[in-house]
Image (spheres, helix red, strand yellow):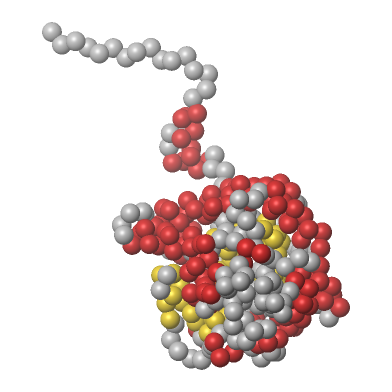
Length: 342
Ligand code: PBG
């Protein structure tokens, strides 16, 4: 005779959380974090000349674009619902010098790029970095002291304030100080207001860590030696990855100095910081999923070790769940396509 396995009596559970996960429809009903194309800001690299797009070796799918191609790319992003782009110039090394003189040239590459994009797409939000690293031959984010053993904070801030005014006059919506000098947000705000640019906002890289994951970006813009000149490391201005309270203190300073949006960078390895910052300010919080975060996922996907589509979505949901309102990500275009079902 066959023994009939009897069903054990149901556990007496008042709570069965799995009920909410039972079907796709139920899961969707209780989903807490939803990505949308408007969450993303696309970082884009621009170069001189009219060469065709050049792929960045350590960032598959990311290209250096000439101004005409940049405008074309912006048009596509805009059509996909991406509200904003952040432009980064890669300069001809011949234009770089010790003090980053080119940064104050009113006809410098990034300003011409801004004018072209704003002329074609006035509704697209354009953001530009305020920092000297693309312009200095040593790759640091500011000018050096005579002993060349430090970035001269106050001299650098004066240059950054001028740079921000040039960018505002070229039509950017937000200037984004990414240098981590003390007092730069306040100085930039005052300079913008004095120039009549009261509508130009500041997206401050407030808690920017001294991360090894910036490597691919430095290839992209050619600022590689900045990982540390012999006497001077970026650790003297970017934050120590070990510090958490310090991020809140940096953010509160930038908030008080007049930043409109506060940013944490990198993003994925700093989710605790994003959460802390979210709770410390009422202003919008941005997070930058940086080049190394992108490169890691691309590399693992190429080896067949990770599923790129699922991993990139999970990496971005995590950043938003941690508290970011806006995410700078090299996946912006692909994610927007995916979210629109295309
Ligand atoms: C520099 C700047 C950096 C990034 C954006 N602006 C790198 C650095 O400090 O060397 C990094 C972005 C990325 O890695 O994707 N002011």
